[in-house]
Image (cartoon, rainbow over the protein chains, first blue to last red):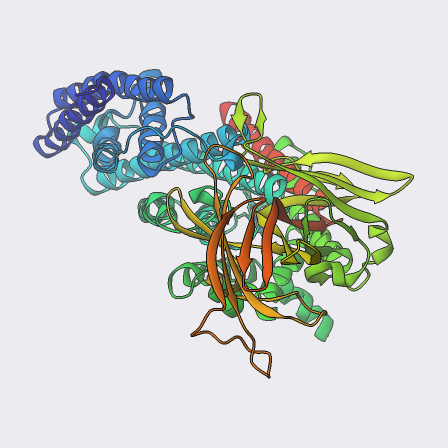
Amino acid sequence: MKTEYIFFWTAVALYGVSTFSYIFGLIARYEKLFTVGLYSALGGFLPHTLAIAVRWKTGGIEPFITISESITFGAFVAVLIFLVFQFSTKKVKPLGVLIMPVTFVLLGWAGTLMKDVATQIAPALQSWWLWVHIIGATSGFGSVLAAAGLGLMYLLKEKKPGGIYDKLPELQDLDNLSYRFIAGGFIMYGLMIISGAYWSNTVKGNYWNWDPVEVWSLISWLIYGIYLHLRITFAWRGSKLAWYALIALVVMIVSYWGVPFSMETFHSGFRIEH
Amino acid sequence: MILQKLYKFLSSYKLAMALLVIILACCVVGVTVWREAEAGRIIFGTLWFNGLLVLLVVNVACCFFPRMWGRRMTLVSFGMILFHLSFVAILGGIIYNSLFYFRGIIRLTEGEVIPSSEMQSYDAIDKGRFFSFSRLNGETTLIKMHTGYKVKGEDKRAAYEVAVGEANNRTHGILYITNKLTHRGVDYFNDKEGYSLLVILSDKQGQELHGAHIPLQSLVLGKDHVEYSTGYKDNGVVKKDVVPFPGLPERPLFALKTEYLPSKLKERGGEVMFQLLSLDENGSPVRDRPLAEGKAGVGEAFAAGEYLLTAKEVRYWVGMMVRYEPGQPIVLASLWAGLAGMIITFIGRMRQSRK
Ligand code: HEM
């Protein structure tokens, strides 16, 4: 088996351990399991990083071109944001209960779609705009995933106060944190869309074509734009927005990886008639 | 009275929310129920949908700005103003562009020179009401098409060496997929390319009677399996077929089908298959009994009855997109300004909450 695959599946396995620790920790209301979950996530993050690095090194091509690479990289940034948040605040211990299952499933799915490294990158993609675009997309996803996780914390705490939930921040703070992540994610999506538009303009001379990938990204952006207006101009707070963040996340995943890559668009690279 | 009511309607939060939700719903329908070209025809390209977008911008203008008026300028409000202002500017850019733009596809064979400011030079044209062809004065020339073109070790595949403009004001350059050519604000993008054969008809003595560049279509049959043949495109699908030879406006003698089999070893070398059909009295090809059929190397003669056919050389033809979009810089700059606005608001809020 190739080194890359060993790293990859080790990461998947450790994220699996993390997932089950978080879920059982929540069911059993046993806080130690959250710590196990966090450290197995950290343990999985290392081979996850190495798997990406090895692939990048062998192919010499940016490691996020095919769908499995894209999902792998998205999961990578999501876990990175989660870990940085966890280790810098230590306030929301059960947060991984949403984030780790989502990344575990995503990464496992990416594993089934994995192909050998391409030898060449399509000419249309040979640009550093690709980096701006992808960093916008992945960190946007990581942020709204964290926001949805915080929304879930809010709902859980609101429903059954006491026990392990006492250690969570106050409801209002959870709500605020979740909003912060949404606002950050909204900016990163903005970066993704605008860099995509800009780059499309340099390649094809038009910045917006209403192609399905573009429309899907607009959908996710509008969804979070509506969130922000519900909050700021309509003064929504709390559980309504927490639900909103959770549902929006589903749309997010579909719009990212469910649909666009299965279609013949700009995103499948430029085909040259010749 | 009515004006007041209208203003109240246009400046309500509810309208803003309703519009955002409706546009969102249209987008969802436009990627699920209908897609791509169909979605463009039924939703995104329609007057009512674009009307909604305009209404959204009017709404931003009536709702957002009066409310911000007189408010103390903080980082948060400055960012928000920048963000919503960029929305308005984007619409301005789009409208301006729609009046002056030009989009066309120009197709030429290596060595060919075409007048740029004549409608007939383009396959397809789309333009704004106030576009003036004088912007395109001069000629477009395809000097050479380079295959496997490399820039800093990266394979750009096809690169077109092109010159555009008039004698005293000419731009000469090489364009490939991430590198357009710009002349007087008009951008040239590479779009598609193919082979064309210089076919010479001569009599048995080798006396040349006629010669023409015959463009070939490419049929992609699989990875690394492409056929190049005369034919036409039907709804994006290439069909092999004969072409009249000599071509119109001259009087055709036959119908000719050629297929080019490129050599793997020699660029622009290889073999050519010919099929020659006679024409009936209406000028339609008689398909069941070819006059002659066979193969010859590039540069070699193929004997077809009392004539000789020679594919003398292989050249490339290319199709370029020609675009003049004066509103685009406004739109793109506004997009970046909007992004900056969002970031400023975000930073402002972080600082507020820290206090
Ligand atoms: C119908 C058009 C729109 C109107 C009338 C409108 C109006 C407003 C108003 C009144 C505010 C709050 C200002 C305040 O009182 O503090 C606001 C904030 C904001 N709007 Fe809009 N807006 C519109 C469209 C949009 C769109 C399409 C987006 C992006 C999807 C957007 C993104 C934002 C953002 C990001 C904020 C700031 C949120 C924050 O502070 O975190 N707006 N808008």
